Figure 1 (cartoon, protein in one colour):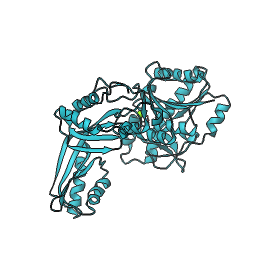
Figure 2 (cartoon, protein in one colour):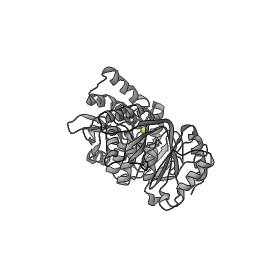
Figure 3 (cartoon, protein in one colour):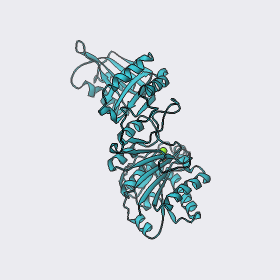
Figure 4 (cartoon, protein in one colour):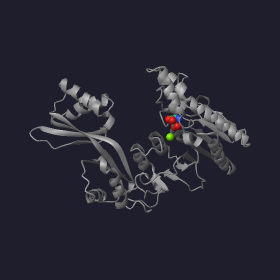
Length: 412
Ligand code: ASP
Ligand code: MG
Protein backbone atom coordinates (compact mmCIF):
# COMPACT_ATOMS: atom_id res chain seq x y z
CA UNK A 1 0.00 0.00 0.00
CA UNK A 2 1.24 3.53 -0.66
CA UNK A 3 1.91 5.48 2.52
CA UNK A 4 0.71 8.99 3.27
CA UNK A 5 1.85 11.13 6.19
CA UNK A 6 -0.73 13.57 7.58
CA UNK A 7 0.25 16.04 10.29
CA UNK A 8 -2.28 17.96 12.38
CA UNK A 9 -1.10 21.06 14.24
CA UNK A 10 -2.36 22.26 17.61
CA UNK A 11 -5.34 24.27 16.35
CA UNK A 12 -6.45 21.29 14.23
CA UNK A 13 -6.70 19.08 17.34
CA UNK A 14 -7.70 21.78 19.82
CA UNK A 15 -11.00 20.12 20.82
CA UNK A 16 -12.59 16.68 20.56
CA UNK A 17 -14.75 18.07 17.81
CA UNK A 18 -11.73 19.15 15.79
CA UNK A 19 -10.04 15.80 16.41
CA UNK A 20 -13.18 14.20 14.93
CA UNK A 21 -12.96 16.45 11.87
CA UNK A 22 -9.30 15.60 11.44
CA UNK A 23 -10.05 11.89 11.83
CA UNK A 24 -12.64 12.20 9.06
CA UNK A 25 -9.96 13.62 6.75
CA UNK A 26 -7.78 10.64 7.64
CA UNK A 27 -10.72 8.36 6.84
CA UNK A 28 -10.98 9.88 3.35
CA UNK A 29 -7.35 8.98 2.62
CA UNK A 30 -7.72 5.48 4.09
CA UNK A 31 -10.72 4.95 1.79
CA UNK A 32 -8.49 5.84 -1.16
CA UNK A 33 -6.24 2.93 -0.23
CA UNK A 34 -3.44 4.59 1.72
CA UNK A 35 -1.81 3.31 4.86
CA UNK A 36 -1.63 6.53 6.86
CA UNK A 37 0.85 7.77 9.42
CA UNK A 38 -0.76 10.59 11.38
CA UNK A 39 1.53 12.93 13.31
CA UNK A 40 -0.18 15.01 15.96
CA UNK A 41 0.76 18.12 17.92
CA UNK A 42 -0.48 18.84 21.41
CA UNK A 43 -3.88 20.53 21.68
CA UNK A 44 -3.54 24.29 21.06
CA UNK A 45 -2.00 26.07 24.04
CA UNK A 46 -1.08 22.83 25.85
CA UNK A 47 2.67 22.98 25.29
CA UNK A 48 2.85 26.58 26.52
CA UNK A 49 0.93 25.55 29.63
CA UNK A 50 3.34 22.67 30.29
CA UNK A 51 6.39 24.90 29.77
CA UNK A 52 4.85 27.29 32.31
CA UNK A 53 4.42 24.50 34.85
CA UNK A 54 8.05 23.45 34.47
CA UNK A 55 9.35 27.01 34.87
CA UNK A 56 7.21 27.61 37.91
CA UNK A 57 8.43 24.41 39.55
CA UNK A 58 12.10 24.86 38.80
CA UNK A 59 13.53 28.00 37.20
CA UNK A 60 16.85 26.29 36.44
CA UNK A 61 15.19 23.11 35.33
CA UNK A 62 16.78 19.78 34.45
CA UNK A 63 16.33 19.67 30.67
CA UNK A 64 15.56 15.94 30.77
CA UNK A 65 12.58 16.49 33.03
CA UNK A 66 11.51 19.51 30.95
CA UNK A 67 11.30 17.15 27.98
CA UNK A 68 9.46 14.52 30.02
CA UNK A 69 6.80 17.10 30.88
CA UNK A 70 6.42 19.12 27.67
CA UNK A 71 6.34 16.04 25.43
CA UNK A 72 3.25 14.77 27.23
CA UNK A 73 0.78 17.02 25.40
CA UNK A 74 1.33 15.03 22.21
CA UNK A 75 0.75 11.72 24.02
CA UNK A 76 -2.76 12.83 24.91
CA UNK A 77 -3.69 13.82 21.35
CA UNK A 78 -2.16 10.65 19.88
CA UNK A 79 -4.32 8.47 22.13
CA UNK A 80 -7.44 10.54 21.54
CA UNK A 81 -6.94 10.47 17.77
CA UNK A 82 -6.47 6.68 17.78
CA UNK A 83 -9.64 6.27 19.86
CA UNK A 84 -11.59 8.56 17.52
CA UNK A 85 -10.45 6.55 14.49
CA UNK A 86 -11.40 3.30 16.20
CA UNK A 87 -14.86 4.75 16.87
CA UNK A 88 -15.09 5.22 13.10
CA UNK A 89 -14.16 1.54 12.60
CA UNK A 90 -10.73 2.42 11.23
CA UNK A 91 -8.03 0.13 12.68
CA UNK A 92 -5.61 2.52 14.40
CA UNK A 93 -3.23 2.67 17.34
CA UNK A 94 -1.08 5.34 18.94
CA UNK A 95 2.71 5.39 19.19
CA UNK A 96 4.81 7.53 21.44
CA UNK A 97 8.22 8.50 20.09
CA UNK A 98 10.13 5.90 22.13
CA UNK A 99 7.82 3.11 20.98
CA UNK A 100 8.59 3.61 17.29
CA UNK A 101 11.44 4.22 18.28
CA UNK A 102 12.26 7.67 16.95
CA UNK A 103 15.93 7.90 17.91
CA UNK A 104 17.45 11.32 18.56
CA UNK A 105 20.59 12.93 19.89
CA UNK A 106 20.79 13.74 23.62
CA UNK A 107 20.43 17.51 23.07
CA UNK A 108 17.36 17.90 25.28
CA UNK A 109 14.74 20.41 24.07
CA UNK A 110 16.61 20.75 20.77
CA UNK A 111 17.29 17.14 19.82
CA UNK A 112 18.03 16.05 16.26
CA UNK A 113 16.52 12.97 14.69
CA UNK A 114 19.08 10.24 14.11
CA UNK A 115 16.99 7.30 12.88
CA UNK A 116 13.43 6.08 12.47
CA UNK A 117 13.43 2.30 11.99
CA UNK A 118 10.31 1.46 9.99
CA UNK A 119 9.90 -2.23 10.92
CA UNK A 120 7.56 -1.96 13.91
CA UNK A 121 4.99 0.21 12.19
CA UNK A 122 5.28 -1.63 8.84
CA UNK A 123 4.61 -4.93 10.60
CA UNK A 124 1.40 -3.49 12.04
CA UNK A 125 0.34 -2.24 8.61
CA UNK A 126 0.93 -5.80 7.34
CA UNK A 127 -1.31 -7.11 10.10
CA UNK A 128 -4.16 -4.86 8.95
CA UNK A 129 -3.67 -1.65 10.92
CA UNK A 130 -4.63 1.27 8.65
CA UNK A 131 -3.46 4.25 10.68
CA UNK A 132 -0.42 4.71 12.93
CA UNK A 133 -0.97 7.79 15.07
CA UNK A 134 2.41 9.07 16.23
CA UNK A 135 3.02 11.72 18.88
CA UNK A 136 5.00 14.49 17.19
CA UNK A 137 7.83 16.58 18.66
CA UNK A 138 9.38 13.77 20.74
CA UNK A 139 11.91 10.97 20.58
CA UNK A 140 14.30 8.97 22.71
CA UNK A 141 18.00 9.57 23.35
CA UNK A 142 20.77 6.94 23.32
CA UNK A 143 20.52 7.07 27.13
CA UNK A 144 16.87 6.02 26.90
CA UNK A 145 15.52 9.41 28.00
CA UNK A 146 12.61 11.24 26.35
CA UNK A 147 13.73 14.15 24.16
CA UNK A 148 11.92 16.93 22.28
CA UNK A 149 12.83 18.50 18.96
CA UNK A 150 12.35 22.21 19.71
CA UNK A 151 9.16 24.28 19.48
CA UNK A 152 7.19 23.60 16.34
CA UNK A 153 9.02 20.28 16.06
CA UNK A 154 6.02 18.19 14.97
CA UNK A 155 6.49 19.48 11.43
CA UNK A 156 9.96 17.99 11.51
CA UNK A 157 8.64 14.71 12.92
CA UNK A 158 6.17 14.54 10.03
CA UNK A 159 8.75 15.16 7.31
CA UNK A 160 11.19 12.70 8.90
CA UNK A 161 8.51 9.99 8.87
CA UNK A 162 7.66 10.76 5.26
CA UNK A 163 11.34 10.32 4.36
CA UNK A 164 11.80 7.17 6.46
CA UNK A 165 8.68 5.47 5.05
CA UNK A 166 9.12 6.78 1.52
CA UNK A 167 5.66 8.32 1.72
CA UNK A 168 3.93 9.57 -1.38
CA UNK A 169 3.40 12.97 0.26
CA UNK A 170 3.45 14.71 3.60
CA UNK A 171 0.31 16.78 4.21
CA UNK A 172 0.60 19.42 6.92
CA UNK A 173 -2.84 20.44 8.17
CA UNK A 174 -2.88 23.82 9.86
CA UNK A 175 -5.08 26.88 10.40
CA UNK A 176 -4.10 28.64 7.15
CA UNK A 177 -4.96 27.29 3.74
CA UNK A 178 -1.48 27.52 2.27
CA UNK A 179 1.57 29.67 1.67
CA UNK A 180 0.86 33.19 0.41
CA UNK A 181 2.82 35.60 -1.77
CA UNK A 182 2.95 37.82 1.31
CA UNK A 183 1.21 38.33 4.65
CA UNK A 184 -2.53 38.66 3.83
CA UNK A 185 -3.01 40.76 6.97
CA UNK A 186 -0.79 43.43 5.45
CA UNK A 187 -1.62 43.16 1.78
CA UNK A 188 -5.12 42.29 0.75
CA UNK A 189 -3.95 41.30 -2.74
CA UNK A 190 -1.84 38.48 -1.29
CA UNK A 191 -2.41 35.33 -3.31
CA UNK A 192 -2.18 31.71 -2.24
CA UNK A 193 0.57 29.93 -4.13
CA UNK A 194 -0.22 26.54 -5.68
CA UNK A 195 3.44 25.59 -5.58
CA UNK A 196 6.59 26.93 -4.02
CA UNK A 197 10.15 25.59 -4.28
CA UNK A 198 11.92 24.23 -1.19
CA UNK A 199 14.57 26.92 -1.33
CA UNK A 200 12.00 29.70 -1.53
CA UNK A 201 10.05 28.21 1.35
CA UNK A 202 13.25 28.02 3.39
CA UNK A 203 13.88 31.72 2.84
CA UNK A 204 10.28 32.56 3.66
CA UNK A 205 10.17 30.24 6.69
CA UNK A 206 13.33 31.69 8.18
CA UNK A 207 12.05 35.18 7.44
CA UNK A 208 9.17 34.56 9.74
CA UNK A 209 6.36 33.11 7.62
CA UNK A 210 5.53 30.83 10.54
CA UNK A 211 3.73 28.14 8.59
CA UNK A 212 6.43 25.47 8.85
CA UNK A 213 9.34 24.89 11.18
CA UNK A 214 12.47 25.78 9.17
CA UNK A 215 14.13 22.46 9.98
CA UNK A 216 11.23 20.55 8.46
CA UNK A 217 11.74 22.35 5.15
CA UNK A 218 15.48 21.64 5.21
CA UNK A 219 14.73 17.99 5.78
CA UNK A 220 12.10 17.87 3.04
CA UNK A 221 14.57 19.42 0.62
CA UNK A 222 17.33 16.98 1.53
CA UNK A 223 15.11 13.91 1.07
CA UNK A 224 12.89 15.40 -1.65
CA UNK A 225 9.72 14.89 0.37
CA UNK A 226 6.68 16.46 -1.28
CA UNK A 227 5.15 18.68 1.36
CA UNK A 228 1.66 20.08 1.18
CA UNK A 229 0.39 22.80 3.51
CA UNK A 230 -3.39 23.00 3.81
CA UNK A 231 -6.19 23.97 6.14
CA UNK A 232 -8.00 21.49 8.34
CA UNK A 233 -10.87 23.96 8.63
CA UNK A 234 -12.11 23.66 5.06
CA UNK A 235 -13.34 20.87 2.85
CA UNK A 236 -10.30 19.78 0.86
CA UNK A 237 -9.73 18.50 -2.63
CA UNK A 238 -6.58 16.83 -3.93
CA UNK A 239 -5.27 20.15 -5.25
CA UNK A 240 -5.91 22.18 -2.10
CA UNK A 241 -3.26 24.12 -0.26
CA UNK A 242 0.30 24.81 -1.36
CA UNK A 243 2.73 22.16 -2.54
CA UNK A 244 6.31 22.73 -1.38
CA UNK A 245 8.40 20.85 -3.89
CA UNK A 246 11.51 20.62 -6.01
CA UNK A 247 11.86 23.53 -8.42
CA UNK A 248 11.84 21.08 -11.36
CA UNK A 249 8.15 20.55 -10.67
CA UNK A 250 7.33 24.21 -11.11
CA UNK A 251 6.75 25.04 -14.74
CA UNK A 252 6.60 28.82 -14.88
CA UNK A 253 8.97 30.76 -12.73
CA UNK A 254 8.22 34.30 -11.71
CA UNK A 255 11.33 36.31 -10.91
CA UNK A 256 9.86 36.88 -7.47
CA UNK A 257 7.54 34.46 -5.64
CA UNK A 258 7.00 36.28 -2.39
CA UNK A 259 7.62 39.36 -0.28
CA UNK A 260 8.59 38.74 3.34
CA UNK A 261 8.89 41.14 6.22
CA UNK A 262 10.46 41.04 9.62
CA UNK A 263 9.20 43.78 11.89
CA UNK A 264 11.47 43.94 14.90
CA UNK A 265 14.90 44.57 13.49
CA UNK A 266 17.58 46.94 14.71
CA UNK A 267 20.56 48.39 12.91
CA UNK A 268 23.78 48.95 14.83
CA UNK A 269 26.84 50.76 13.51
CA UNK A 270 30.27 50.80 15.07
CA UNK A 271 31.78 54.13 14.06
CA UNK A 272 35.46 54.31 13.27
CA UNK A 273 36.97 50.91 13.89
CA UNK A 274 40.52 50.13 12.81
CA UNK A 275 40.52 48.58 9.34
CA UNK A 276 42.95 45.73 9.90
CA UNK A 277 42.97 41.95 9.39
CA UNK A 278 40.95 40.25 12.10
CA UNK A 279 38.73 43.21 12.95
CA UNK A 280 35.51 41.56 11.73
CA UNK A 281 36.29 38.44 13.74
CA UNK A 282 37.08 40.58 16.80
CA UNK A 283 33.66 42.26 16.51
CA UNK A 284 31.50 39.28 15.64
CA UNK A 285 33.07 36.67 17.93
CA UNK A 286 31.87 38.37 21.13
CA UNK A 287 28.46 38.93 19.52
CA UNK A 288 28.15 35.27 18.66
CA UNK A 289 29.29 34.27 22.14
CA UNK A 290 26.57 36.52 23.54
CA UNK A 291 24.03 34.64 21.42
CA UNK A 292 23.19 37.59 19.16
CA UNK A 293 21.50 36.61 15.91
CA UNK A 294 23.38 38.87 13.55
CA UNK A 295 21.73 39.01 10.17
CA UNK A 296 22.94 41.60 7.66
CA UNK A 297 26.53 42.87 7.77
CA UNK A 298 27.95 45.80 5.85
CA UNK A 299 31.48 47.17 6.08
CA UNK A 300 32.02 50.65 4.66
CA UNK A 301 35.02 51.66 2.62
CA UNK A 302 37.76 52.92 4.89
CA UNK A 303 39.38 56.29 5.20
CA UNK A 304 42.75 56.77 6.86
CA UNK A 305 42.72 53.18 8.06
CA UNK A 306 39.36 53.49 9.89
CA UNK A 307 36.01 52.15 8.80
CA UNK A 308 32.40 51.81 9.98
CA UNK A 309 30.83 48.40 10.50
CA UNK A 310 27.05 48.01 10.36
CA UNK A 311 24.98 44.97 11.25
CA UNK A 312 21.38 44.12 12.03
CA UNK A 313 19.91 41.99 14.80
CA UNK A 314 16.52 41.54 16.51
CA UNK A 315 15.45 44.61 18.51
CA UNK A 316 15.26 42.72 21.78
CA UNK A 317 18.95 41.77 21.51
CA UNK A 318 20.28 45.32 21.17
CA UNK A 319 21.08 45.79 24.86
CA UNK A 320 22.93 42.50 25.03
CA UNK A 321 24.85 43.31 21.82
CA UNK A 322 25.90 46.72 23.16
CA UNK A 323 27.11 45.16 26.37
CA UNK A 324 29.16 42.54 24.54
CA UNK A 325 30.76 45.17 22.30
CA UNK A 326 31.58 47.50 25.19
CA UNK A 327 33.17 44.64 27.06
CA UNK A 328 35.28 43.76 24.03
CA UNK A 329 36.33 47.41 23.83
CA UNK A 330 37.31 47.53 27.50
CA UNK A 331 39.30 44.34 27.02
CA UNK A 332 41.19 46.08 24.20
CA UNK A 333 40.00 43.59 21.59
CA UNK A 334 38.30 46.23 19.47
CA UNK A 335 38.31 49.98 19.32
CA UNK A 336 35.48 52.18 18.08
CA UNK A 337 34.41 55.76 18.63
CA UNK A 338 30.73 55.09 19.28
CA UNK A 339 27.85 52.74 18.63
CA UNK A 340 24.93 54.21 16.73
CA UNK A 341 21.75 52.19 17.14
CA UNK A 342 18.54 52.51 15.17
CA UNK A 343 15.86 50.32 16.72
CA UNK A 344 13.08 51.47 14.43
CA UNK A 345 13.81 49.51 11.29
CA UNK A 346 12.27 46.50 9.61
CA UNK A 347 13.51 44.13 6.98
CA UNK A 348 11.73 43.59 3.68
CA UNK A 349 12.83 40.82 1.34
CA UNK A 350 11.80 39.66 -2.08
CA UNK A 351 12.41 35.97 -2.69
CA UNK A 352 12.36 33.89 -5.86
CA UNK A 353 14.40 31.19 -7.57
CA UNK A 354 13.45 32.89 -10.85
CA UNK A 355 15.98 35.60 -9.88
CA UNK A 356 18.73 33.31 -11.06
CA UNK A 357 17.61 33.79 -14.65
CA UNK A 358 15.82 37.16 -14.54
CA UNK A 359 17.83 40.37 -14.49
CA UNK A 360 16.78 43.74 -13.15
CA UNK A 361 15.02 42.45 -10.03
CA UNK A 362 17.04 44.62 -7.67
CA UNK A 363 16.56 47.73 -9.80
CA UNK A 364 12.82 47.14 -9.92
CA UNK A 365 12.68 46.67 -6.17
CA UNK A 366 14.62 49.87 -5.45
CA UNK A 367 12.53 51.85 -7.95
CA UNK A 368 9.27 50.69 -6.34
CA UNK A 369 10.53 51.78 -2.92
CA UNK A 370 11.81 55.13 -4.16
CA UNK A 371 8.47 55.83 -5.90
CA UNK A 372 6.93 55.67 -2.42
CA UNK A 373 9.63 57.94 -1.01
CA UNK A 374 11.05 55.14 1.15
CA UNK A 375 14.71 55.41 2.01
CA UNK A 376 16.81 52.23 1.98
CA UNK A 377 19.32 51.95 4.84
CA UNK A 378 21.03 48.62 4.18
CA UNK A 379 20.91 46.23 1.23
CA UNK A 380 22.00 42.60 1.06
CA UNK A 381 21.53 40.06 -1.68
CA UNK A 382 21.83 36.33 -2.17
CA UNK A 383 21.19 34.19 -5.20
CA UNK A 384 17.43 34.07 -4.63
CA UNK A 385 16.79 36.95 -2.22
CA UNK A 386 17.20 40.71 -1.95
CA UNK A 387 16.69 42.27 1.47
CA UNK A 388 16.57 45.87 2.59
CA UNK A 389 16.31 47.61 5.93
CA UNK A 390 13.92 50.56 5.98
CA UNK A 391 12.11 52.64 8.61
CA UNK A 392 9.56 50.47 10.38
CA UNK A 393 6.74 52.93 9.79
CA UNK A 394 6.92 52.16 6.06
CA UNK A 395 6.70 48.38 6.45
CA UNK A 396 3.11 47.92 5.25
CA UNK A 397 3.53 50.42 2.44
CA UNK A 398 6.73 48.76 1.23
CA UNK A 399 5.20 45.27 1.22
CA UNK A 400 2.18 46.51 -0.77
CA UNK A 401 4.31 48.48 -3.22
CA UNK A 402 6.59 45.51 -3.91
CA UNK A 403 3.66 43.13 -4.22
CA UNK A 404 2.24 45.46 -6.89
CA UNK A 405 5.57 46.07 -8.64
CA UNK A 406 6.20 42.36 -9.12
CA UNK A 407 2.53 41.71 -9.94
CA UNK A 408 2.33 38.94 -7.38
CA UNK A 409 -1.46 39.02 -7.43
CA UNK A 410 -1.28 37.37 -10.87
CA UNK A 411 -0.22 33.76 -11.37
CA UNK A 412 2.86 33.18 -13.56
N1 ASP B 1 3.52 21.09 20.60
C1 ASP B 1 4.83 21.53 20.23
C2 ASP B 1 4.89 23.05 20.25
O1 ASP B 1 3.90 23.70 20.53
C3 ASP B 1 5.30 20.97 18.94
C4 ASP B 1 4.45 21.30 17.75
O2 ASP B 1 3.26 21.58 17.87
O3 ASP B 1 4.97 21.29 16.64
O4 ASP B 1 5.91 23.61 20.00
MG1 MG C 1 3.50 24.53 14.11
